[in-house]
Amino acid sequence: MTKTYAEINEKIKNGSAVVLTAEEMIGFVKEHGIKVAAEEVDVVTTGTFGPMCSSGAFLNFGHSDPPIKFEHLWLNDVHAYHGNAAVDCYIGCTRMADIRPFEYGGGHVIEDLVSGKPIRLRGISNTTDCYPLAEVDTEFTINDINQAILCNPRNGYQRYVCAVNSTDKTLYTYMGKLLPNFGNAHYAGSGCLNPLSNDPDYETIGIGTRIFLGGGIGYVIGEGTQHNPKSRFGTLFLKGDLKQMSPEYIRGVSYEKYGTSLFVGVGIPIPILNEGLAKKTAISDDELLTDVVDYGIPRRDRPKLREISYKELKSGYINLNDKKVKCSPLSSLYHAKKIAETLKNWILDGDFFLNPPAETLPNDTTFKPMKLVSELKFVKDLKRAAEICYEDCDIKVVAEKIVRKNINHIVITDRENTLKGIVTSFDITKAIAEDKHDLNDIVTKRVFTTTDNEPISNAARKMKINNISALPVIDDEKKVLGILTSEELM
Amino acid sequence: MTVINITVPFGLIKRIDDYSKIINVILEQKVSANILKFHTGRSGINLLLDIPEDKINSITEALKKNKVIINKKGRVIVDIELCIDCGACVSVCPTDALHMDEKGLLEYSLEKCLGCGLCLDSCPRQAIEET
Image (tube, rainbow over all chains, first blue to last red):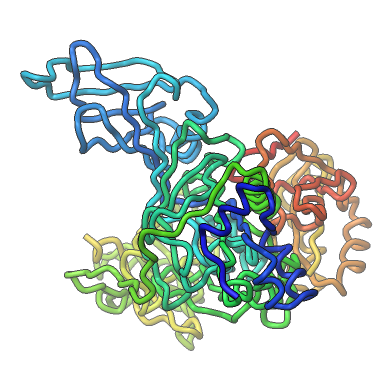
């Protein structure tokens, strides 16, 4: 039993199409079987509403009099990209405001645009014979401009990882606030409602597919950047008219110490053309698997801790090393469901028709890492031997060593070379000023450390954010292997 | 592990040693207590501690004896106009005061809230505020 797009659209037109959300399809197939489902169900609708950092909008303001060709422009103090014709620009959602970074950014500008709020436009130009105006400072709303086109190079991940944190510090990431010692877990995506999870072989979703985007109608315009079908991490390149969209489904967000982004609502209809698609759209949360990944390791290939189903993720707790870890989504499951419902109603009302893609998405591309011409340097490449004193030695011995070796840091260990603390030349100066004589009173015991295999850039960031100038290099047993100081990094 | 919120009233702390004495009450129990948050509140020093379940009773008894206030009620305000029901605050809440209802909408139970504030900087919409 097969159906065509034309047959499905004919049914939509005469009001006899059977449309189910991807959640409803699971129950339908369970009850009636795949064969009946393929015959009776015409369309399955999907939905997702989550942070999608690779989002932004092309705007065209029309020409000023005299005309201007922007060199730089800002929308509510957020720098927009101008590298196109005179008054076109692209506002990206993760670009943060010059004056309130981490609070307001491109995502918020896009939400404010959709909400019809006035936006301040400031632009400067080098001036030319054809574009003589040097500066513009004005205000506009979405109705005042010619085009406002949401154009997102990477949306709607097929699935995404679940993030946890093995370190002893709270991490602030694009996966939200991750508590220390595996204190919580965050995941993204709507599982069985996720668009690409319901068409994993890209049979119906392709270039030109008409979709729900931000409350209006949008289109898939190709595979998204980093599209990785072989690992089931497919992505979508989407566009749609911002003027049709609703602020309910286009929301600017700001993650603490990470920055801004945009929540985008995406819903894609899947035509049930054959039994294969009936089976695929009936996939349930327990069959959809992803990985739990340790964001405590700041490397490209973060360690995978275990495989996990969306069913377990949605239960509110995940099992990690025999511990119950609280788990919550970053995407709104309520809104995902609402999007699938809304799209279903559009189709049932005869307002939305399905179309075959002009071309299907590639299913053989791979996702390559960045090519770096300079070799990645590690701590072990730059560390030097640490000057060491024992924890029970006299301050004077430490002071003499600092002078004799002309250094600023003395690492304090026990007789077994286990790290016990660090003393700087400033600590010695302070000891003299405060008349302290016991090394124990001046040694810093809680020491920030590094390891041989930490990339230099990570160690440097650690020094910078903690405002320190040296890191003892230790092994797994806290034995001192050397020291990395800011001098080595110069 | 279980989370408790303790408040050491300012009245108890005349000198820094007084504070150390109270911390020693916990250390004497020989447990690995993880300090999730430390801040100076309006009425005293607040500590949010993560301690093993089986030690909860002995630690709270010992602290109460020293006039430390345990699990003082607190509250936050969630602006439902700003909230998008994403869930980013739910996993950081130690008491389930912030949780999702059956429909997937965020629900806040005042009676469970310790006012610990761990949720404040977890919200990408800045919809949660301290009172």
